[in-house]
Image 1 (tube, rainbow, N blue to C red):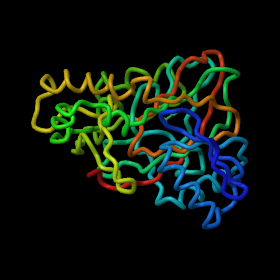
Image 2 (cartoon, protein in one colour):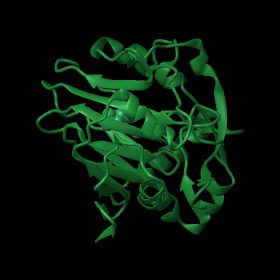
Image 3 (cartoon, rainbow, N blue to C red):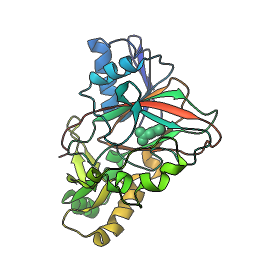
Image 4 (tube, protein in one colour):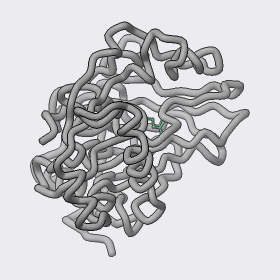
Length: 287
Ligand code: SIN
């Protein structure tokens, strides 16, 4: 059922999460009412989608800034001349894409992003969809016993498995199979600790907060001890019932709340090019 506020309408796109917003032009500074509708929809639906937007990189950044300061990815390349805009692309002969596994963005930071706004510049004729998973639902579906267990845990996150200098990092294993080449760094070893269940600062709801991209182990546990429960949680977090799938069209926009979702960029469009621009908004320290 679509909710309409004046010219703006918000329609849920799947049972678990996601809504399409129409009647908004993201290239112009939203007035207070438009901003409030967009913000409310983000909190209610966890990821929101817009079609047919014409935005310059400056307008994209300006829209993101309404939600908070911009967070620049420490390892991924920016659009030339626009350090705040990450260029996510895969050339037609590349084998590996960026973001092709379930993750929340940059949870290796002390203050991981509030959200990201992804804008489709070039899309394949079919494929290249992005999946999203609702981490409130993932938490709420746990048994009371498992909730008690994970409620008391914290986990260590780092960027090392993705961007570390050792030969086994994702970047070192995959950069020769993709044109987009995130850099590797000694700094990727830095570790930060977050609760396994975080309370969203605005909705007050609890969400599972571990992801296979960046979570290393439970705090105070070894990697070996952590692996079985983490594996179980990763599988649980992405159950189809908690997900939606966005089929991109050129100039579509997805804006996800990184505090209560994970996402997965599908790599199923070999022989075609895909390019997206991403602007990411700083968040606060998970609690
Ligand atoms: C990302 O993880 O930010 C990339 C998502 C996508 O390209 O669909």
